[in-house]
Image 1 (cartoon, helix red, strand yellow):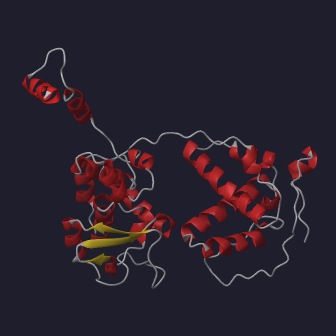
Image 2 (cartoon, rainbow, N blue to C red; image 1 turned 30 degrees about the vertical axis):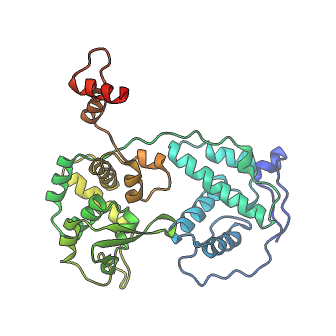
Length: 325
């Protein structure tokens, strides 16, 4: 099989150098493995890439998401994604989308082309010729505590209420809620496998422990109604929580429960961002800042807490005397 340049590159003369065509056998004995739906070499190479990512311990969620994106680009531009040129990729990246999505696309497509280069399927990485999308600061979007009370009141089923509690009081994401099992609770600790298959143990909130009494000690908390032995999907969790928010007349989505969790954890920790970072399971403090909201009263208290040097009060006089001493 010989890779052909994309339709666009045939016109522009921007065809990349493809070194080694795929010659292996197409083995797909894994139902979770992404099915190729793009032209040319892409389907076979996607299976190789998926196997390569699995060998590094990458989560199936990330693998599926990355492979879907490559196939989506191939279908959208009608090109073979394994030999797309920088103009093809630029045209795809220029499509109207949110800044956050564009940044994700940039990183995942960079990983795809980087793998092709590492495996000697091509000599270049077209992503490196494009400008990196400008980072956009995430704004915290927590629901209020009053809104959370309304959401809990509107949760008329045990499993719906349990989803809310896991999101709001343990900070679990939709995919973490979907696959939650009874054995993930061990004494006063809660076990979670998050993004990138990273494991963490979180202190168990007493109210979540109380909810756990009504759920299996072992096995899925949220089993699928249609697939015996399987849990519900993350999309199902998102849908259930969105419908619940609508019933509670709260303009929000399920992930905002995690934003509420991050904000309240930061306050409970006395503003210690490292504690909030650990409990949110973020690698970067900058990411944590996008989840934690500081309200007007806290900002005002911080400003009023500065020492008054022109018109000092009693506390400021004592502070200045200590400094002099």
